[in-house]
Amino acid sequence: MLSVLIPVYNYNVLPLASELVKQFNSCGITFEIIFLDDASQKFVIENERINLFKNASYSILEKNIGRSAIRNLLAEKAVYENLLFLDADTFPAHADFLSVYISQISDTEKIVYGGILYESSKPAKKELLRWIYGKKREALSVSERIKNPHLSFLTLNVLIKKNIFSKVRFNENIPNLRHEDTLFSFELKQNQIEVLHIDNPVFHLGLEDSKTFLQKSEEAVLGLKNLIDSNLIYPDYVKLAHYFQLIKKYHLVYLTAFGFRIFKPLFKKQLLSAKPSLFLFDIYRLGYYCIIKK
Image 1 (cartoon, rainbow, N blue to C red):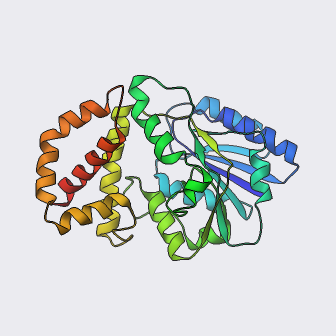
Image 2: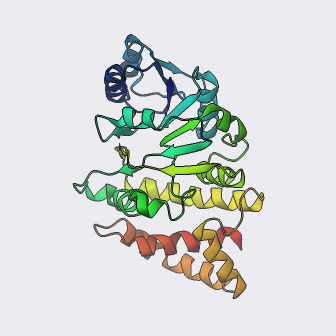
Image 3: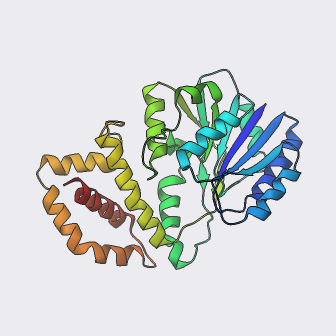
């Protein structure tokens, strides 16, 4: 028995629903698929057709509650013990996607992460930064992920038991600035809950343009700062904060912040170009972190 839980915001999830129902029907397992829309303004008519599928539902909230709260609400609505969280802009890479996860269901206290893929064909120039970042930093092999199992999983494709989720929920008190995955993984590690990495990926289809991704990256840096300042995670848990600690140790925070202010326009120009550098992207985020910390 399996509950598939999918938060939605301004995305057409009808193709995803159709694929999941098709795979479930070939598995012969009791299931439900719950799509919960966080007060979208787009694709509502298309998505309401999901309610025509057996054991699948789509409903829309009256007001937006954010990424953490909607995932917690989905878990509360789930009937079954085994929960599979997917993001709306994902799609199974293989026809046996659900059967692979079903084979992983056991009484062991663990969560299972299947991984993520990006399309191999290069997107338009305006989406290159997000695509390159995703392929290099997120679309990791199992052998790469298990080197740091807790930090190397994303909640966009993860199997977890309801009793584990009752111990480690998404924190609804933090600002809606991303890094809720980071805090969730940290708390799993603190509770000594195993993260099992397998090769069962989804494609990430929803590429933001580079300007939007850069803006969201700044929000994520601010979100990381808030987590550390609130003592919710250790400063050395994330590489960015670890490198900031080194800069702070050698009294270089003000110098780094000053340099970032001067070179920020050049950084942005390069990152929005046809050949964005992930090294400069890391420098950009570190410089921004120094700005908001000094």
